[in-house]
Image (tube, rainbow, N blue to C red; front, side, top):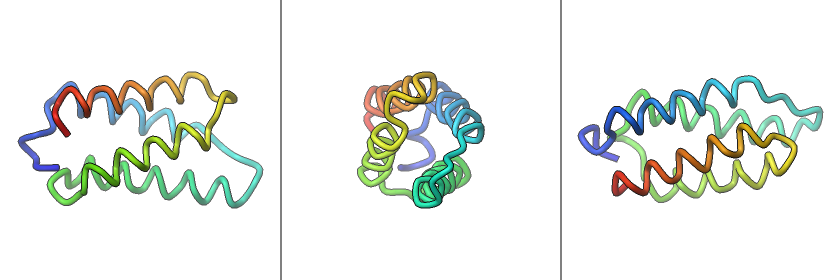
Length: 91
């Protein structure tokens, strides 16, 4: 995901998503570990956008929607906005 391909709007969307994911906690250790992995990957994308594979990142965001399900509608909506933003940016 080249640095030039992440516009400011996409970056802000991903930053907002990261903040929202920071507020989510699971009782189940496996779910929490998966969420932590998603958060770390998102942080890595924000810190070094040129290093990430866009396809696997989009897959990770889709997995996050499934993981969070209907129990976290605000975060799920933010993830979907991030996916849409990445798609509009051609990422």
